[in-house]
Image: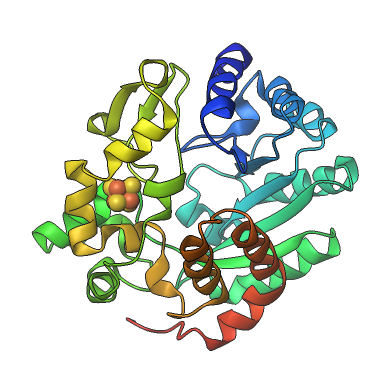
Length: 306
Ligand code: SF4
């Protein structure tokens, strides 16, 4: 995406919706995008906070300029502390380069930028988690461990439909097949992606679901519709109806790994009922992610489905 396209998108969306955050990434690597520093600055011109997620294998070309724009949140995804463990999931990546780039981030970041190391939690990498946690904390970063799912969503749906395992799902803490029942039981829960996430690509095309990447997920140009019309259309979209009927959205949001009444869910239900979605909830998300998640992790039956 170019900065010009982002400006057109923001210009339109800001008039049609209340924007809580701009996530300048999808299934790609933001630190490879030439216009990224300009795009962060542009979001700030509109007073919008920015989140970027990176595997941090590349940094030097655009990284310092991106950090100089003092983005609000930088997430760094890792899955190991040593190369043999790391490269199992991050194929072609180099964990020593990532660690060196993490040190550069610690030096260059603005105090306004919250940096979070997101640990992809698999069965095979649990023993290296404390090593990365200590390294991250030494650099002044937050550390959060996530149970992983098989995404994009169409891959998990295929496992449920055919009953055949996907080789990419073999390391998951909770196998895709074993998650099916829990997702089905929670299928009446709302889908945050459907209600609140709008994904636009570099050509200005919108996706229906932020967890799918197939061409059939595209729904035309953002500039031919409005944000409220788009969100409304999802309620009767055949893909969404089929997905919610079996709890696919629960899998996509990884809501099957959380306690039923987690602080985040409570905040979500409470805010939806009061019609104030997005205010208290995003605050709760921040507090939950940074302060309560480590506590909640201890209560979650991590070994479920093994
Ligand atoms: S209901 Fe399913 S298909 Fe629709 S946005 Fe949510 S996860 Fe995607």
